[in-house]
Amino acid sequence: MSNPASSASPQLKRVLGFWDSVAINVGIVIGVGIFRTQGAIANYVDTGPLIILTWAVGGLVALAGVFCYAELSSRYPQTGGTYVYLRRSRLTYD
Image 1 (spheres, rainbow, N blue to C red):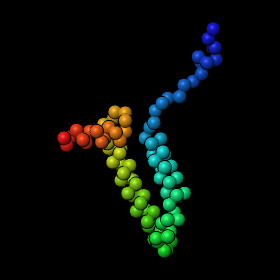
Image 2: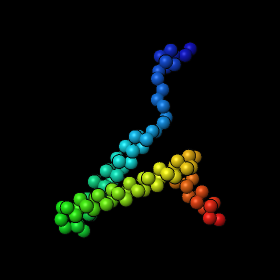
Image 3: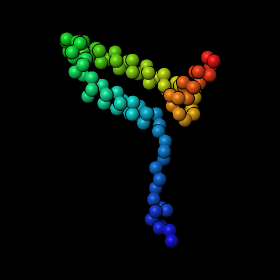
């Protein structure tokens, strides 16, 4: 016999939206940046304002990378991520 409680249980959608993707990227940047590299940056830069400026420039570079991946994923919506983009670039130039 089937369990009536299991057939009525709600199912989660397996979908990531725009804000979900933004939250994932922000979490990765913050997690890696703050917890792993702050000491190394402080070794090379002497003053507090320069450290903050370094973080701001790094954030803009990371944002540019996120925009590049967003554009690629909108042009090539197949599954496979970076592999699809690299394969497509190889086929274009061969």
